[in-house]
Length: 97
Image (cartoon, rainbow, N blue to C red; front, side):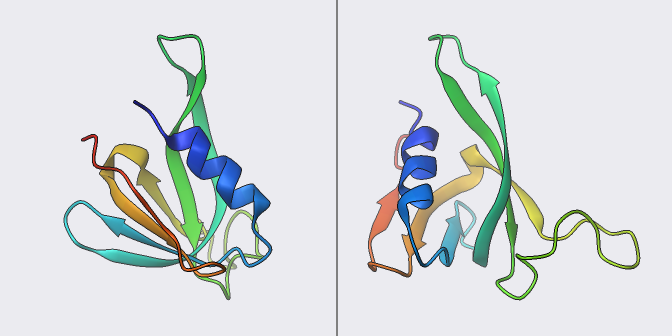
């Protein structure tokens, strides 16, 4: 089951948008979601394919930095093991991989 929309809905409801994303390979990324890429899935719903995550200090900047590099990092949804929400200290696990 694709839980990407559940993640998006929870994230939108937060006041404190800081998160920690733990990737399947163990890497931890701290920051805020600044964008996402969605696509129609086979079941007719819309799933999130990729997330753009930027450090908290960079999150208010959109697009590229002064040198032309994209701000933040693009993460495949399928590469995420869990997301930790700083606001309420909850963890959303993605064990269905």
